[in-house]
Image (cartoon, rainbow, N blue to C red):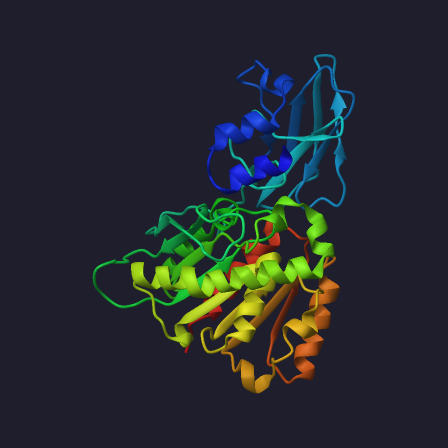
Length: 384
């Protein structure tokens, strides 16, 4: 049932209503108080989370950025609650664990769209608008496109990608724009970088500030074999499965997605105006494609890249002469397990005299790190 559910979701066959109906149990949907305040953000940055279920025996809060789940306490009315410490301005993903089963917040319609886990989003505002928030500036447009793949296994007709075009973009005339191919992580859908990463707002704001050159951003569904996500986390213990997924996606990107994008959008076909970057699984894919196809990409970025799987074999032909990149940018949070393999890979690159810019910032394997990574990386690319 789980595999079929994820397969249908990956194909986009059913919308959000179907997703909610599947993962929220009947007792949760029956929370009849429409005015129930399940996530109250306080002026000091604390959040009070509430979950209504008088019959539950144990409820935990899973909050993005917290090392451990927070236990919730039940009152006489059957309302479970917990108050977080003061939090920095950010978008936080969260979910409830009710008697061992992960659940949505049925009173929050801001869903964290994902193929494997359930969750919602809540924003702690700051004194000023953050780079990932909508501001009073000219806005670009996000387009949703589909393509039929002869390469991707298990998802021939359900492949999609999103395209951000900057303010002032004219599809019929004018200059050709630089293009960034931006890849999501394992378990995300193609819309991960827009719905959770807020890519369009980040670029709107940075372009308005003059910090980023106007560019087109392409965000494709990043699986070469859909079983790699349907089969769960165990796929990361199988190097052959990892290689198959990366290799097939790389082929789909180069032979199917890029040609379609270049035929439909005014983007440059020159390597100096092409960049590729991604997070986690997408970081592994972007480094693989970028470092093994330097004739196509001059700017490469990896955010918390899922390295540590046949790296030396995968990048065996990479050296200072073959790479010849304008920028190789590798970032990772200092509080996550992928820090060690990223450091090891950086050391290996340096042993090959490959120039690399290394960024390490506090943080776990979370969108809070990756939104900041994108905001740091984007101003560096396509600069003279």
